[in-house]
Image (cartoon, rainbow, N blue to C red; front, side, top):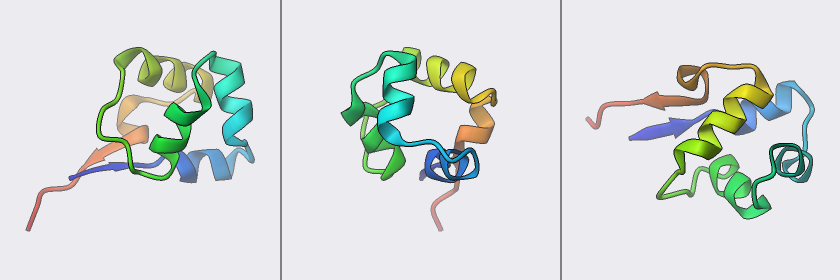
Length: 68
């Protein structure tokens, strides 16, 4: 399972979905799906832009959790 920590990171930085989407020039729905952890596909360019904007590494954003 892949866990996305976008909601936690955005909460710590007090950022809104719309503000992040606008800042990185990505459709709001793409950010919402990651934020809600309902995304089934993620564009690498979106991850690149998020990491640059949030000043984080990919491992800060995404975590692999082995299935039990």
